[in-house]
Image (tube, rainbow, N blue to C red; front, top):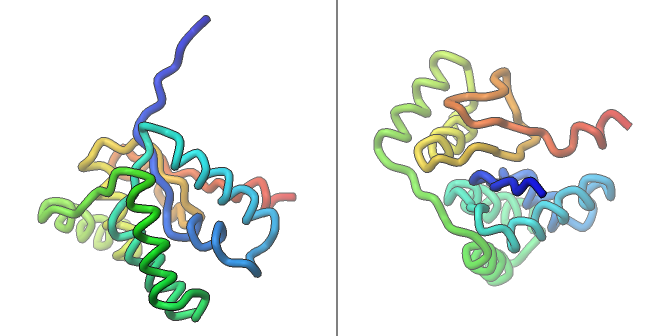
Length: 148
């Protein structure tokens, strides 16, 4: 039997939002919750600190959670997977992506942090124009849902 080794991977903010937002489309909720379960079980999963910050910002702005609930949610998520931070070179690389490929700043930062930490796959609805920026494969886990 051939054994495959899973490479480091992570999820973007939109996956967390779909997994926790009660009025998100059901099909997207299912996919997002599957990824969240996998995140909690996989030794190769990680979360970018920027993603947790964006998640907290969105749920508070939408009033989907109280401050206490949002704090509890990011606390639980930060225990489920290794958290990756941003270095000065990651910011500089992100700014280059923004300038050269017109990436949104926060998406570019997430990709740059992934690249710096050897994360090979980012599940995100926001793939942008590049499918493998800085060697990070960006996969839209909801693409099939949108096509159906």
